Image (tube, rainbow, N blue to C red):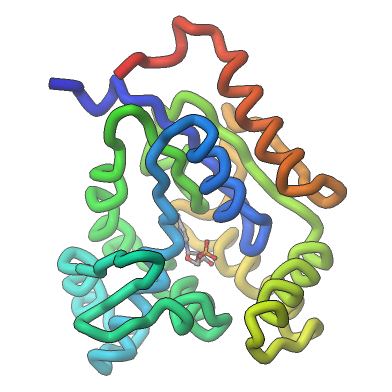
Length: 229
Ligand code: C5P
């Protein structure tokens, strides 16, 4: 049996819309690893709270929801309690709710083990805010991926328009700045670059360049630092 600590983890943390999700998926494809989109868990929690009419400040009820969170991922669809929430989960309103519930230490604790359970052989690429600092402090490679707020707003705007969704660039920029501020100043697992993470600024890089840099960093690690599962 493989013990979890022997399974490599590539942690990618950073602010909203820095491209972490896309980068994590592509890095995982190249390394043949599993992926954890931890933001999705916080988004699902905010959505479930809305479905069940739980207030976003009702910490005991939110914590209970977090520990029992059960979503099915079917062929690119996300289903919660029989409802397809694939689109709603990506909306800016859901993201704002996610950032609110994510500020509660008990809620974060409720989701901790669920995230660690994604660590399966042959390896995991995990993206979020606290992958390297709290969820997988022993991660094999830690990257802090960022880009200027304006560039991130522009990317998110383009994504929404391409999906045929309503979007307003200045509102998106405002949302991103508010979310960055809330994520950075919360008392537990705040958004921050941990000391052993490498900073990667993607403002003037393409997704493929970012992916290539992370994959190269991983492959160039000293083999003694890479657990073999
Ligand atoms: O990454 P994404 O934008 O989907 O995350 C939505 C929100 O969930 C973030 O703004 C943040 O508040 C919260 N989050 C978090 N810790 C994580 C991942 C996401 O607090 N590891």
